[in-house]
Image 1 (cartoon, rainbow, N blue to C red):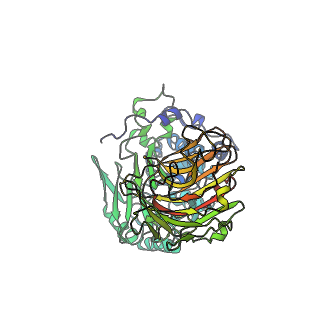
Image 2 (tube, one colour):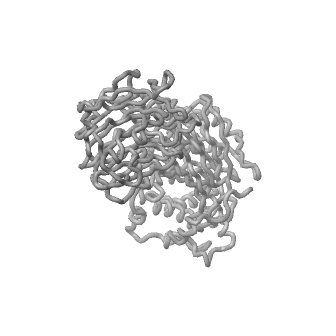
Image 3 (cartoon, helix red, strand yellow):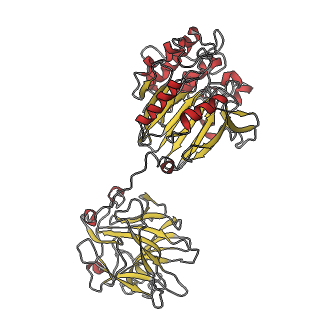
Length: 609
């Protein structure tokens, strides 16, 4: 196969030896068992964080050659499980799914070898599922086959102690788990090698009983891939699983199976027209029975992606000086079949059964917190006056640059998803010629005299117009009056005393004359994406000023002290700025609302909270 990545990742190299005594260092040497009374949870440190938007589902495919009568070696799988326990917090491992063919010959002696290895996860209380592959049972029969050595070790009795375990079919061969990760619950089905019609009916009922949960289906036989063609295809049984269970259950978005090799994947649309990702992963025919290879599915709900990597913790832990040539190739598989990313817009994909609730609008009165000196919301039709909800009387009046066309200010239903008011105004400003509408406080507004010696917070919901025109240095919020007017004689005393603007590269600029400086003081942001809503905040604690975008502090915030804001006792402008008291252009984009508070706020106190 073509190689997408070259060599072993630096992270893996640096982790070499990290498993210590918990894994064998050379093939054929079993791992040391922990002393009596020791627990892997103690060795593993902290547990997983169920509310972190980034979490890991570990997948373990066919391990049958590791448990093959008097042949095999438990050390690779032991090392994999210890790796998951020890990296549980760092990788936020929330669940582990075995894909079947635990053993080779379905013998009780083989399951007796596998039993204590899974005890590593039991003692660490790291939840997992196991399902029967064709080598684990009488493969000629479906899940009504009756008792078996598999059930004695991996039947319902084993899983009843787990908080994630939801139940099994009466025959014991099909089960489900519900685990919490990324701030929500997920359902994982572990289906038998050959579910009966009753088994499929049970699975459909489980899904129906959990109508809002996204579902991951694990089974042994579903899709396969040919060498040289990683695009997976349905097996005959896989088509049956699709028709009986997947096609009409929109909640199933990911299926994972073993049985075949090499690995591969395919995307197929279900009856609702939504993507289902189907993955085959199996390494039993590679060196040392697959070397205990595991797949890590790193879900990232913030980035809308699943990053997948494949590695052997057993080989990874070996002393590089003693690692065999064949083992060297098994540390990590970096071809694009085994190391890849799956982009999924989770909110959109799950919207049909678990829509993200729209945050309700919040009345302005609820957002007038102590210290609020101005609060303007653009949630009504364009009119000559915009009310200041703070109660301080700092109302705004609309104004237009000469020659501005009709519609330079327009009401809109668009808004930031976290915005209290569900509306905005579109400011259709521009330059060359200067045009557009803006707003200003009255000549006698109390805000004009405010100097903010004790600090301030200015926050706004903004979307820059994506029209391809030049809007460089347009102002969002400004204060009439220059440095000269305020008694400042710095480098350019014609600059406004206060200016919140966007550079030619759409970088946020907060440039002001503080009370305690004779020159301008500037914070810089990064380039903002036009056509995308964001929340902007400027916070000063009386000593330092910090810019935030979407509650994240930016880099280019000066460490130089800055106190207060100079004033010439002139009006504030919203949607425009000036140079030497001449307005050269108006803002181009949407403004949802803007609040000014005469103290520093923490992000948890922002309008997005």
